[in-house]
Image (cartoon, rainbow, N blue to C red):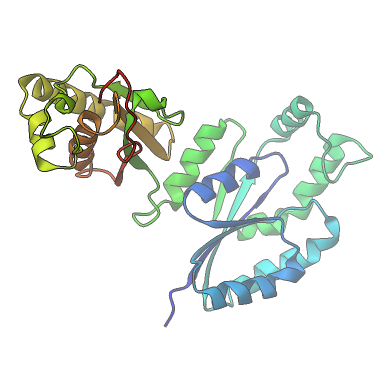
Length: 294
């Protein structure tokens, strides 16, 4: 028997944070669809089931089109009758005063008050959504939440061991080929002993055991490594708590083939004890003869 598809229906008051919510679910690995007309849902479910590749879906359902309201209610009533779907409704709410303030700040029109007073649109929407809110498994009042706090609330309620999204990339690179612009932390290791000047090691890389040992057997390298890995273990939890889903640690030497590769290998292997880690070597295959050496 196939595992049920995890479905989260994101709905609620316009301006209460559905955009932040859907972005959060994307980071949790959900396949997200924004405001699909209810009439298309049967075909959508058919495609999802046939593909067999999607097991987490988040649908944003709101009242941007009042014409779909009756269909939306009927769809939500029927979700519980589908054996292959494990459905939950997330309802985002906020006080009238906060919704007014947000609309005033963005200067957008309320979808149910395009030609009338903002408060009339908010009251009408709140009345129309009353039944849906009662059916929701989770109601989140975002009146006093920042976007980051809403994201944390969603992660707290929907993140599992399988959907844990925080991961680390340890990247080696060569300064002479430019800095990696997407790095969060950059460490320069050009002060360490350079295997390039050892004829037997020059043509090899930091993935070769002899080069790796040459770099790591230096007392200077060992002292640096212990300080660096201690610092990383102290600060990485802070990045995770701030809501980052990924962290790129870039380690650079001159050419990106010897010292940085060896250090990236060791640092990445150590961090794998606690986090999902990918180790990449951006410039390991590049050779560029200049006055500067790896």
